[in-house]
Each structure stands twice: as structure tokens, then as C-alpha cells.
Length: 294
Image 1 (cartoon, rainbow, N blue to C red):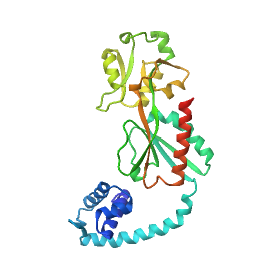
Image 2: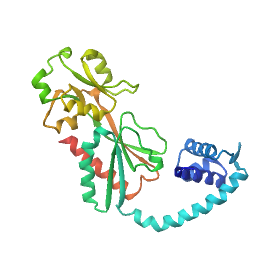
Image 3: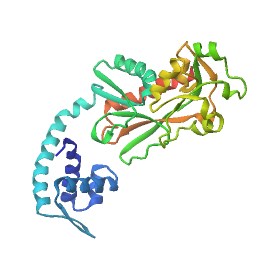
Image 4: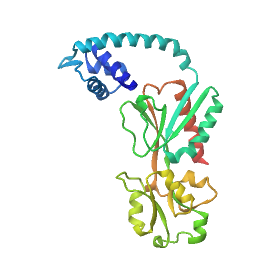
């Protein structure tokens, strides 16, 4: 069984101990639906039934009673360890893992460096990739996500900032093809994403204004699109904070409101109140706000 099964086992233990799913979910501070998923996933992994479901509660089977004894001993050991480590949680120390989109690494790397200098007992890791890491399994402490507000029930979600997008081109492209003038889209070359079913805020504008034949380079990942624009392949959407910080990039069209998306700070409820996470949330809100105010 995988190591990430402990959260499922712990949920099942407290369901067996307290007798009802709702009581266990309340005790663990999780959503009722999450507790159900943990029980179902554990029974699937073990290939056995752990509970008899009754209108008044969950009654452990023989396998469930065995689990109750074993998990109870483990829970006690964790409780003893937690009491020893609780004092350490009051310090801003240890490893802090932050995950964000590939295109945001340029903006967040300096913020993480400044945070580590302020709190030298912290070791920071920045994971910039398109795949969403699972906070509930401890893959990251803080996620910075773009788009609609994340809806996972066990996560704490806070707004960070709006993310302006603009059309940029490399200065060498502008020397060869000139600036955009009016609606002369057909005279230019554009860089765009591969249509994979996901929709970015600027996709509708692009579909309505850019002739398909003018799009000469497509890529699935935002970082690859940025690299293509930087290489002079054509005009493309970049985060304004990325384009404006590069002296070789020229803004071809300023941001429009319909191109914007929202940035969110996401933490798991189990780690949200730890000292290092709270310190980082406070720090990044101030620093990122300063970046956009300048």
C-alpha cells in the first residue's frame, strides 16, 4: 500500500472510534465528502469491507476492528511525536515548498529568495510546472494558482492579485515586421497555445481577432510559448510582469480587462496555521502587491 494511504487509514480509525462519518469529519476538520472518499479509497485498496453502513452510523466489520486496534496504536505514537514537535512549529524553520505555473517562476523566485533571507532557518523549494501538486498529500505547502477560484474542500483559498496579460514581441521581430497598427493582424505572425479543451481568458479575443493562418507557432505549455516569443517567432500573450521585466520585449498591445485572470494562494487546512506557512502568506501578499504597485 502506498504511503499516502495513512490519511485514509486515519479517517477510518476515527470513523470507527466515533461511530459516525459526520463526527469523524468534524473531529478531523475535513469536509464530509472527503471523509467518504477516504473510506471508499481505503476499502478499494485493501479489497475488503471495513464498515457496515447503517442509518445511525458506521459499524466496523471484523477487518474494521483490526484496523481500529492497529491504527489506534499508530495514532497514539503520532500524538506523542506531535507533542515533542509542537514547539518547533512555532518557529519559521524547516522546508517550505511552493508550487506555481511555469510562467510564474520569474516573478516568484526573487520573492522566495527574499523570504529565505528574512528567515534563514527556512529552506525554500520552488516547483514551477503545469501539473497541480496535491496539497492533501504533502507535495507542497503553498500553491499559487491562476484562473477560477479553486474549489477543493480541504484547502484554504485566498486571493493574491489579478494577473494582467499583454501582447509582446521581441525587438528583433519588431525590426523586421513593425508594430501592430490598427487591426492589421494578417500582416503579422503570432504565437499561440495548442487547443486542448482548456480555455484561457484571452482565447475568445484571439479566436475573434487573429486569423488562423497568422498563427505560425503553437505549444502546449506557457513557458514554451514565452521561449518562442523571446526567440522572435511572433507576437504572443505574456504575463505583463514577465514581458515588462525583459528589456528585449516590446509591448504590442496593452492589457485588456478580458485578458486578465486571478491569482490565488492555496494551502491545505492541516498546514495553513503553521508558523512557516503563515509567515510566507503574509510575506508574499506584501511583496507581490509591491511588485504590481510599482
